[in-house]
Length: 395
Image 1: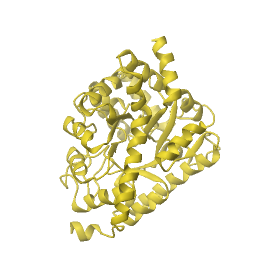
Image 2: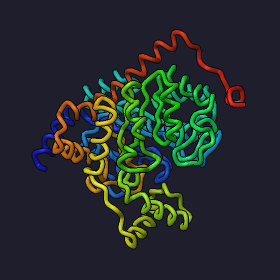
Image 3: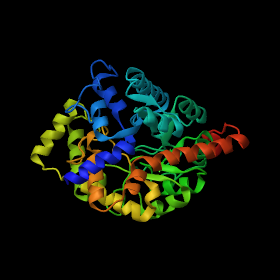
């Protein structure tokens, strides 16, 4: 695959990756409590993190949605405060590395960063618990630079069902629909990764702007509730949205689903959260893996999802969102953010054209943000900020 790999690198130089989801901010919180001197991403952090600036460059990443995630077991104002800390560390990273990173709030900012040879740094809030049922808080996050919000994480919020929790709302409540409408007015992308299929369908019905799936793959290829059903993928064409395939093994490789369930139980038995990727957490994971060989995903596994997603949604409605530094395990040849050329080489081998790959890596993601900005301009001209409350709408 040498020729394909060389061609992949050439393509990425012209059309770099817009990655929909990277959990580096949370990793910095967990590893060093945001002390950027102790974990300097200007240096190679292999073996500690999936992400650093040299490997982002090696991987051909031109824009990154940094997840300002907080765990779903954080609630109320604690979740809001932690989200603000996450936003703060992204801005500190950009300020610390001005030659490498540029804060991006718009599609034009993304293009400007590419022209300057810098990595556009955008932010996405992962989970509606980050706004504590407050539309004013949603607006505040947008003013601070957040450009998508994932409606739920692994647990339900009072106004939307998660893919991995017991359904309560049956999708979106009336307040949940108002959240979507206010996000449309703001120009904040509605992210449907992590939400239940009914929440996906409700959001597509309500949203006046394109939606995204920042890190989700195809349910037909791997039957995990975190993935996108075919009817939802097919609806993206009319909506204008983009589904960004993730690399997390349990979401892309059927054999990894049960293995990961057992590994998560082992983590809990050791008093650890399954998402703990600190050195102590990873030591427990590696010990479990030594006794229970792990099913191995590869770039070809991800390519199987992208082939299917292209067939169902169309080439204009797909992208990539690796979820690096948000997962303990990654595919063998997509081990970290330097691995994107391996994925493109695999797609080239399968006959994907240069134009297809340019849409997958760069053009689709930039277009979806630009389209959301256009909808926002129209809506702001006719719609005032919503002051609705969850008590008013949901009783």
